[in-house]
Length: 305
Image (cartoon, rainbow, N blue to C red; front, side, top):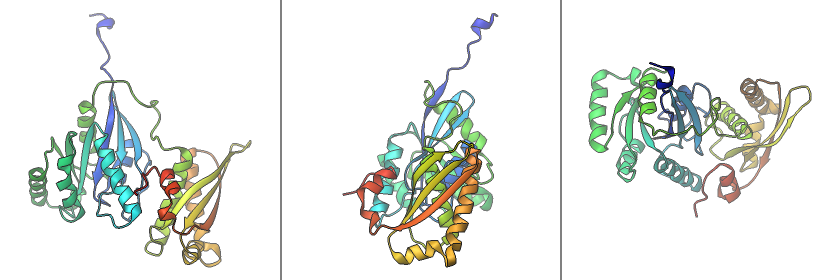
């Protein structure tokens, strides 16, 4: 047989939306599947605000994972925008992956999400995450219960943290996507601009450092990005809060807190860019930014009227 007859398999590509209740592990899973950090991960719920796309290449397929904000009962305008964005991400995808925290099971936000899946026409697969912490009989019961409530093609049991079960998931998704050219260059892992990813990293460090002290009324913007002749980059970012009392919390005693946030963020941004980073953080009070349409546009969210 001549080499001409040995055709390479056709390339496949498509968008796979990950939806789930807050803290089900969507961002951890996207980072695990992509093999690099593209989405911020903290112990706080609702840290993913806008849609983040992580790009994984598996066999002959390019899988664009869409990490959506957690689906929950919205209380504020920002909450409403995040939930609308999440469902929008699901309805635009080729395949919808529904993630359930096996430890928590089907209750609260997860239960409401399953009820709303009837409105999503795309093919759906179910993923039970954190299965290493749950007894097998509970997993079987959970699988049966979830499949009774929604029409899933397949169920996968994984640990997003360790990567267990993720290979099987990638194998299935890669074969399930439609044939077609790739959307992005082979080495690209995210469609998030570097300025925005840098702002997200600082926001993650802010959340990790301040735990319960700072509510969700903070927002980070990269205002200046200057490539220097010596190969380093100078970045200026502004942390916006809503009140003076929050500004004091972010700064900390004698500026200790903001210094620690800056050091952690600079280190990680430098590792991603593979070049020295000079990071300068400023804190500004912008009252009621949660009702400012411009901020929503910058976060990639639709302003709810």
